[in-house]
Length: 268
Image 1 (cartoon, rainbow, N blue to C red):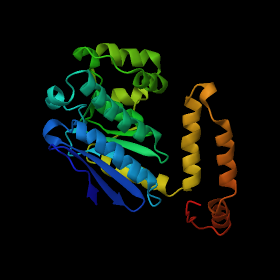
Image 2 (cartoon, one colour):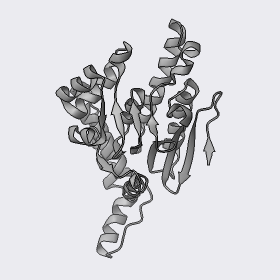
Image 3 (cartoon, helix red, strand yellow):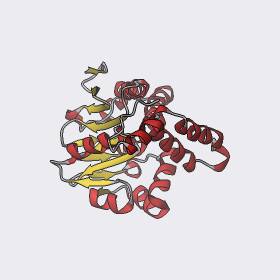
C-alpha cells in the first residue's frame, strides 16, 4: 500500500488488491473535501494505477461513511485560490485530476457513501460507473455560491441524464437522494449502506475477470460514441476490434468454452 503525500490533513490513499486498484479520498474532518494537494495527488494516483499492468479496474471512494466528497476544501480557498493566478492554478489542478480519471483506459467505479456534492459529484461523473448507498445525498450547489458550473461537466451531465434533469439539478442547486439519482440515471445501482462495499468489490471482480483488451476496447468505443462525430477516431476503433480478434485472450476464451472451464485472461 502507498499513499500520496500531503501538506495538509487530507490525502489520497492508494491500495492494490489483486487486479483491483482502490483510491480513497481521505479528509474525513472536512467530509472528504479536496484540498489543492489532494487534486494533484489524485491525478498522480490515477495515472499510476492506469499504467500498472496488473490492475484491471479502479475503485474511487471516500473515507468513512459520512461522505464520498463534499467538493473543494473551502477552508483553504483564501490561501490557494485568491487572485487570478492562484485561481487558475487551482482550477488547472482540479481539471487535471478530472481528466486523468475520465481518460483512464481502465474501467472506473465511484463508490458513493454519504454526501457527494459539487466537485465531489463532478468527480463521480468522471467514473464509468457509479454505485451509491441508499442514504447517499447528492447535489451541485454551484448556483447557491454564485459559481458557474463548467461546460465540460454540464455536457457530461446532459449526456448522462438528459437536459430536463440536468437543468433541474443545476438551477435549483438542491440536494437529492440516491433513489432520485437512480431514477434519473445519474447512478447505476443503489445498495444498503452496509452492503455498498461488497457490491462494489463484486462488480469490480466481475469486470476484472473479463478479457482486459476487450474491456478497454468497450470503454474506448463508448467514449468515442459520446464525442461529436468529427472527433471520433473510428480508425482506432477498427484497430481495437482487430487486436482483440488476434489476441491470445480470444484464443483462450475459445478453448475455455470448448473445455467447459472459466477462461484465464492475460491481457494480451
